[in-house]
Length: 215
Picture 1: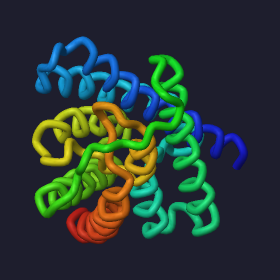
Picture 2 (picture 1 turned 180 degrees about the horizontal axis):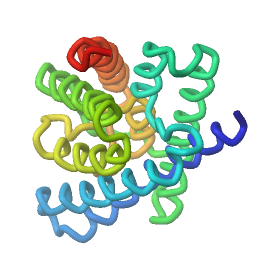
Picture 3 (picture 1 turned 45 degrees about the horizontal axis):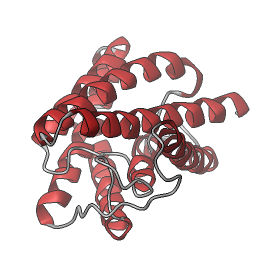
């Protein structure tokens, strides 16, 4: 269990360091072009997900996401106790990754975001992003488990662009991004609604794909 938790911690740490670090770098280099900045944030995020799932998948399953952990708990592939430990570790890992990204780029260590991400469009975007992510994982596990790392990386890369919320699709990521007043941030007041929508989407997707895949 210790190895599994450390795997979840360093995996989520690395994910957030990439999300925030690439967001800062992209914004600085894009010279005000938001589309270029988003592209510079998207590609590293999708790429690091492939790497992290390949590395940590054999150890902890590489959930790196409370929504994914909830899905596997519903499927009884992880116990309730272990799920809570995973989720707590993911949140701590995510916040740690944000803080290290801030240190790397000489940003204030804790700098709450002022980026407003609220409203029906944003919430629907998060629902679609999370539902699709869970579906991607469960569908690949059924048909081609070895494809999960690549499918997840590609799905998130695509969802950055086709969802209104730029596809957080991860409660730990959402909480951590509240600590960063950068390109990838979210205002702390908006976090609870995002997390609620993500968890609802994960639960519904788990049952839907259980039915669809006849499991």
